[in-house]
Amino acid sequence: MTFADILGYSAGFVTSLTFLPQVIKTWKDKSARDISLLMFIIAAVNEVMWIGYGVLLSPANWVIILTNLLVLSMSLTMIVLKLRYT
Image 1 (cartoon, rainbow, N blue to C red):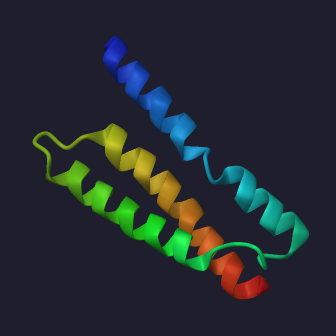
Image 2 (cartoon, rainbow, N blue to C red):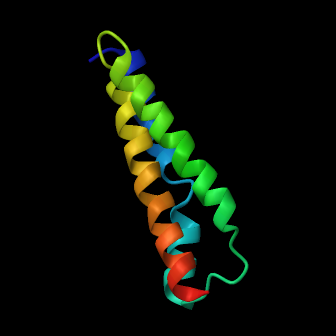
């Protein structure tokens, strides 16, 4: 694994953590009143497009794919929490 690979996976991991504090707070508080549903829908669509892009590259770019799969899972979690706790 090259330094660029390590940097890419590390950056992807940190990027994947961006929504984690909000997911945890919403889960703990059982409230999503102040959360923007549209923001997380837009984020989810964006992540699906990035995953598609990563898959279509030759060879497929696993940093892009894995990072956006993780962020997509958190975006979808927030969408579910928003619908459940509003």
